[in-house]
Length: 106
Length: 121
Image (cartoon, rainbow over all chains, first blue to last red; front, top):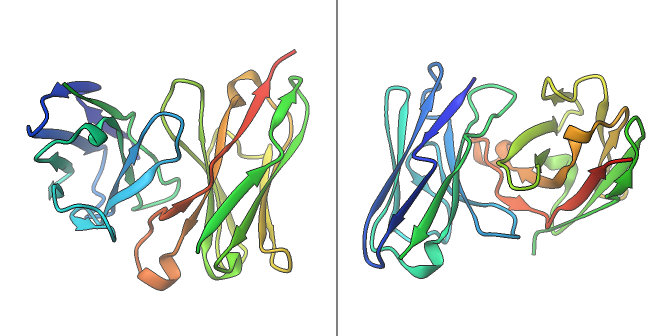
């Protein structure tokens, strides 16, 4: 299963809002996770099952699903949100990742 | 506290072999799916392999037949044996826990710090 993320990168101001999209090449129900990775660090789980917030993740992060399209939205952007965000499908093995979206906070 | 510590990375020549280790603490590797994910320099994440609680395994097509995942329950450690290494295998290799048996959903909720494998002559 191929996962296509867009855009590859984006920039937004502190306090702003960004939306990242991930499209699956086939039906994956809601078997979709989102991760955040800052430079030099391991990824961190943000959202699982398309829209469920992982423990400890701020409610500024949210996820949604529409068919084979999935969206990660971050509101009230903070400087610490500068990172690369990845989607991952877990519908079937191999659990493929999207190419990533780099978010810069201005 | 859940912790994963990878080791075993380094410089290896093309065609060579290397074994990575992932020592876990704070939980049992035998009670979880354990996964290896890699990240080539400056690139995105690539899912590599998984070992299920029952011991079955699964691999990405690009490592099938060259890599083997295993675990030692007595040492609470997961391994990735890599053979016939190629330049394109150069990456930081992470191990991660997938607590699907407890949660019902596949996630990678805990990650190690990664170990760098460089394949070059």
